[in-house]
Image (cartoon, rainbow, N blue to C red):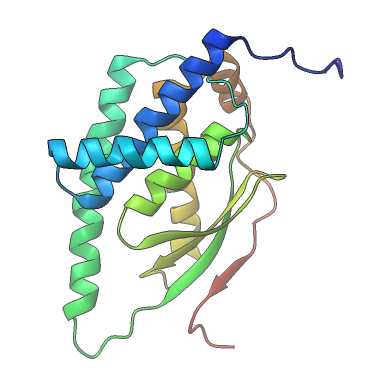
Length: 201
């Protein structure tokens, strides 16, 4: 770290960042509606345009590159997780005589960048049964509410799943520096706090 300020972004880089942000916002908009149609795409473009004008994003540079094969792997796994999680939540909803427990789990990500935090949080929130409650940008920690979690072992399994999701995202669109940081990160350490709802005291 040299401590020198980053050089100002060029016009070309700013245009590219706006294009990436627009594509991301439109994708999330279509996923939230659950149907791919021209009406949803056009309305998503309108919403993205308004958001980028009224709430301009900070100058975050996309330093990575898109890798088609890891991106396809990420999408395939993400769709599988959607189906599995939807079935699990549906079973919890119709299961009689069972009160599902939940937990608020702190998951520190290994790569603390705005783009990685955003992509990982969005991917988690789109999967039924998990919802982002808060993001600590300083420490790169996601606070996630998860239903169907009953034991500490299940909490740790969820944390590992989030870190696996982070690795798949960075493999698909991360920079060489981010991927290298991921490979050299030590996943061990002190456990992060967890709040198990309904757990006996």
